[in-house]
Image 1: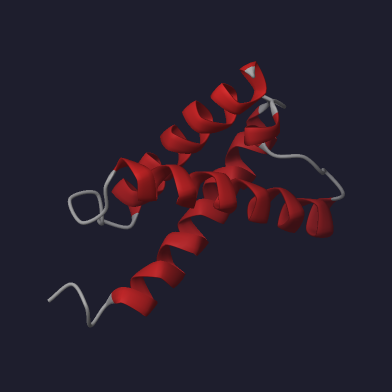
Image 2 (image 1 turned 180 degrees about the vertical axis):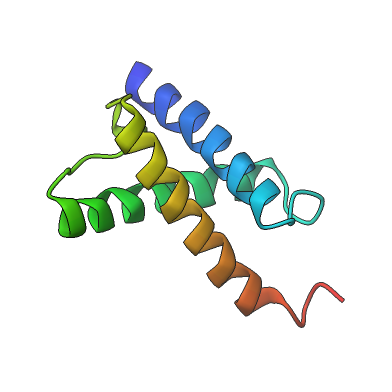
Length: 91
């Protein structure tokens, strides 16, 4: 149970930071921030593992700077993809 709470909190924070970086904070709500944060964290952990051999992600409870950075990078990339897919719908 505590693991899910950590996923939601860390995912929400990572997703919120990514939405600020991508300037989408006012356009997406907390649920989208959490989804982008968790999925982006998993994407970043996978990408970081492929590039550097440093596996893991912040949402899995591994709180080191490398994992947090890769999680944020993954969430920013995912936020950019979401932005491309929803660009015509928000206007």
